[in-house]
Image 1 (cartoon, rainbow, N blue to C red):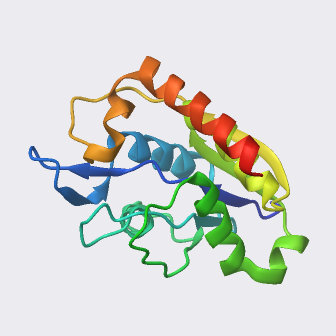
Image 2 (cartoon, rainbow, N blue to C red):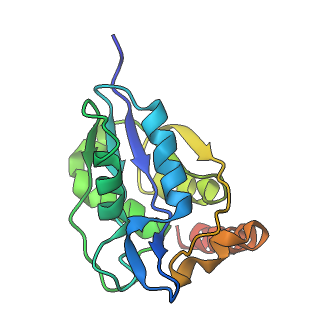
Length: 178
């Protein structure tokens, strides 16, 4: 029998229209991460969508991801996310903090597999570990840059070398504050 796996999905932005206005759907990076989860999750597994941003739109990243996964036709996989609407930007450290608040005491009795874009994965693992998550495995999803619009705040996702530099600087910041 399959032992349940608890996946944590780290948000990777929203798609946008040509003017940069957020659309209620995951960005091209986030969709590739979600598609990866769809291929590895089995009946009985649980997916926890880390809460995140709406970038001034009506739908948050985690809500858009939930709808995307709901439409994937994987009925045997449970999907959860906290109801969080925050006006200030929620960074990766905040993703972990809000998910920890949602799970409360259960966090001490659970183990997880973290799933996110490979460039973001090292910092994300650090942030979730410092919040007390027991991470058994990190899934680093390699993604292809698509010629699609993404919310303005995440413009660097379309340029992998710049994204790497951004993540290094943010990782140093997160190490200092943890």
